[in-house]
Image (tube, rainbow, N blue to C red; front, side, top):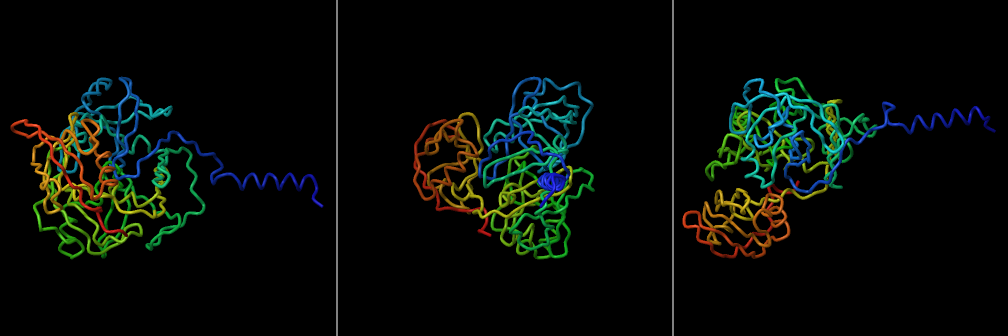
Length: 403
């Protein structure tokens, strides 16, 4: 028979065991829904000047504001050199006042002013800034693609069920330590591919799969770890320094976070080793910045869709529609067979028109319309003549083979 005191002690013990490790309740500072697609995450931010969209980029430390919305910034502290895919560039340096995400007031941060037009053209969304990891460094980010939810968490408590990652495919919750011993102060994942050490940044600001610094890319090509794609000219991508050529290839071996790298695409980014969203979408993630850990579970999901192969073209987005930026007949001849040419402005793509044609809607058009014929209306680059045609989307094409 238990005494009242024994019952009281048992109740206290049960309550203590029910508390998270650390004894403090977690606080969700902000949450929003996610799309199940490898496109940068836009956040609704309030600044002293008004509301804007900024995309989440864990590959940079500070904040970036487009000149069109930078009126609230104080006088510039001078210029700085900013590293970017495609090269380095000069940018004005500021200390930004506090901005707000939902009801969460983010701290003052070092920021730069930079034209975001290149990003808007590449994705087709009205982003006016970048939110780097420095402003959220005291939190944890939970990215749950399965339930399409993003959360920023304060007082994050490490899950007791998580096990250290051992190198094998992690079926249950696993974690790796993040290294911050680098000049950029950006948390990095350390890995080794055939005895070649690599420090990767998790770059949620890009929809690429994997990228390597130029010297490391060449080193892995020479070692046979990467097969350089010589069947075509260099791919080109829109970057902050313009229309930039990127050498590409695919891995012949290796493992990263339990994912076999064989046949995964990899680019020579110039000066950054990055893991983009097209790779991260294979996981549900918790990035614990304050605890310097990445928690992850492998998802049972198909690879991202290759809109390039399904359309046979790279698109550049704008208010009127989207322009044909480049044809890629080696990836598929859909656009070429439909009579589209580089420079044409697409006004209608299936059911999509004008501003509704963007990276997200085109991705979903390909996901739901594989093999179908769609109506296209376009305007010729030189003559401005409007014409109609029909484009047959290819069968489903993925960015890389299923893992």
